[in-house]
Image (cartoon, rainbow, N blue to C red; front, side, top):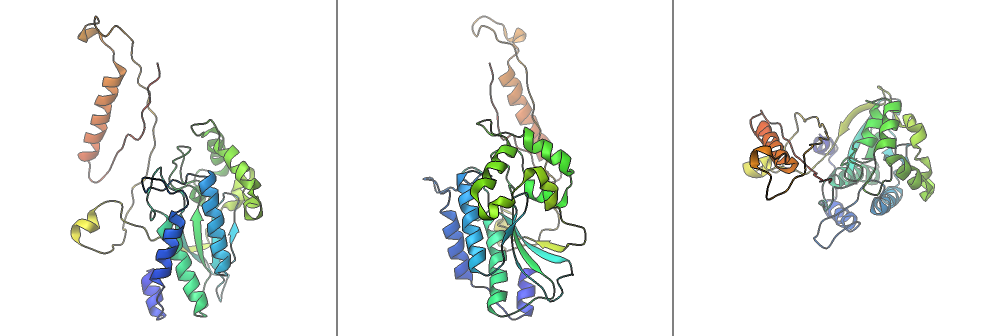
Length: 293
């Protein structure tokens, strides 16, 4: 849809400029193994946000940040009362993630808007690029904070409760991390989890949301296709399971009397994998395990 829109205007984006932006952003959080780590509101995430805000300023795209930490740039349309088009994705990553996941969707949006600006083209309706807060959930095991705030699917009260209860490995709550980030000044002053409902968009505020994303599976690769159009998406569900066992002497407790939590967990993991394999397209992953004695 983005390509068709640009083609209808006889406009082409600068692919080299887009590539260079992706490489520059990829240096923030880069690790020795060539992976990139920027988890929500950590030092590298804040650095990436500042880099992105500066980019929006340089492109004259009127940047701003909302109470949830979502970052926007925009071109005001000829009829700004019309619902806007959003183009975007996210800047946070999983641990040792790639340079393109999320970043491509955000920086592609910047490139589209900047090209329109440079060509002196004002669209009929406002077009915005957005970087959504925390798509991955890598730091707090709680994801989609920015998009949830925009559409308020859980209600602001429930969202605030979840932000207060979600903690990272150091015991820092999501709520605390957001309030700490708000002290970074300038645009960051707008981050306010206590009034996160202010980030919500109305039903008539958005006409469409577009996102360019790299393929994370191998469907297109196996088919030899350069790109595809998503027609459906799976809903994610997270669960925490505790398996209780019983300690005993490794050399004397008989096999029938053993209550080994680890072997039970292994059976569960294999069962989860089989359930997903036998389904019609669903996937399942046991992402983390820990042993408490």
